[in-house]
Image (cartoon, rainbow, N blue to C red; front, side, top):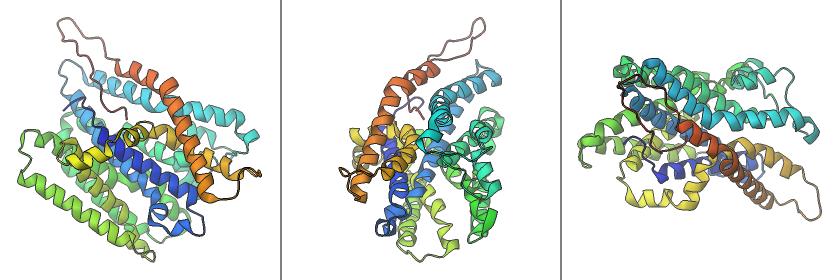
Length: 373
């Protein structure tokens, strides 16, 4: 299982980043904003959180099995490889935003820069009960980084035997908190940018990873596996039924991220175990999987591109939303692809090759290629 690459998981990423793009590009349009894919596109970040919980748990578990490495070495390997994936592009864009953002019309709230660089912009958004300017969508990257800082000890140590009850408890607490905050105004209305409000998505990914590990030796027709798939299908059905209602109450709407998270969690297990070959073929289609592979770059740049394209006032570009959206999507994908091949991938490969120095007599382990994050 360790080091396996499943193209269909990148396909899930591709669909997720496309949903987020639709939300940001057309969420305020008088017509398109009513479409479910646009209206609920922001929930695409929940699928990212599920995938993060799933893949990070598997990686950490594999590191925890390396008896030849100390706890500190395991943590360092994880930190270096994660940093190689997420830090360079994030800080490169922040630097460009700081240097040229004002001239390009991308303003950032005074005093927000330290919060951006500390991966704490989401906390500032919550504390100020309002948006902090360009790059505000980085709140989800901050949530992921905060998860990476807190979660590893639960898998790298003997505490992992408590992983399932911890994940379940946190997911339940998250749902209760989100429902309790539903419909609130002021600062409470901005609490959705905080990490605790997304622990159900991370929890779904963690539980999926634990189940996937335990199910390695089971037959595809195992009863527990069928139960997981049935629960996932139920969550997906309930999500669609509730999402169809545009007048859905705030508390019912607060359940949508949880239903989506556990539906995606079951899907991830099926894709990982190659139990849904037709669906794997669709989601693993090279173009879609390729979009997913560069989805991190797309997410980082897309909102800047959308704002820039929407500001263009030129006779050669008529004010047609779909045309502008197509141009913005094409530019976002192009920039992300250039970043991936020329900047991100070389750094990521260097990070994946990192391993600590071992003492005399220890086995040398070469990392295997897998999902880049």
